[in-house]
Length: 143
Ligand code: HEC
Image 1: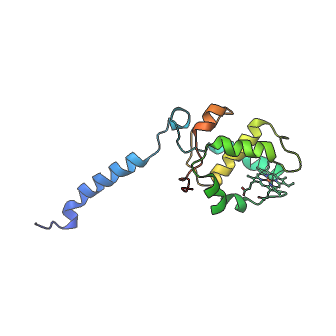
Image 2: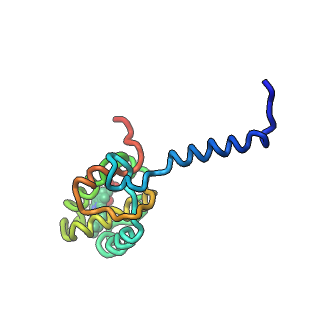
Image 3: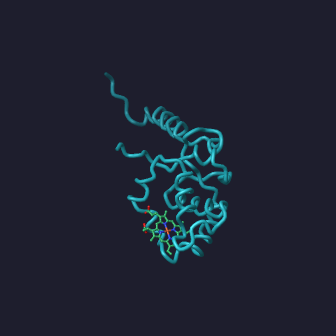
């Protein structure tokens, strides 16, 4: 076989790389339309979450706790609704259910941001059907 220098192959290599990148990019419409896609984070919603976290959670939690491998592994691939429901029904520990559903969701979106979820152009709605469809990133380890 004749071995071409890399420079001659470069355009083809770049074209293949571009195709791979394009096919890996998340569908912008996935946030509400797709089933089982990773949840994505609207920056303004996450900023509201930061303020609420400072006010209602920070007394007992550091953000580091929610960026740990253990935290992510326990939730990988699970519907965002589970994390939302877990927090809504149990936190703040001294006054569970104290916040509105919208406020709990804003905090959850902030936690998703801390876990490296990609950016979205739409906010996640307080809608169980949507929150059941979008997932915490990562593959759930086989049990
Ligand atoms: C009065 C103290 C207190 C406050 C305020 C509080 N929590 Fe907690 N939270 C705890 C304790 C205690 C636990 C169980 C031990 C742990 O995992 O830290 C816990 C556990 C959790 C867990 C599970 C942790 C894990 O690693 O799986 C999440 C998620 C959580 N809290 C979120 C929140 C959020 C969000 C808020 C704010 C709305 C909040 N907490 C406010 C005390 C508190």
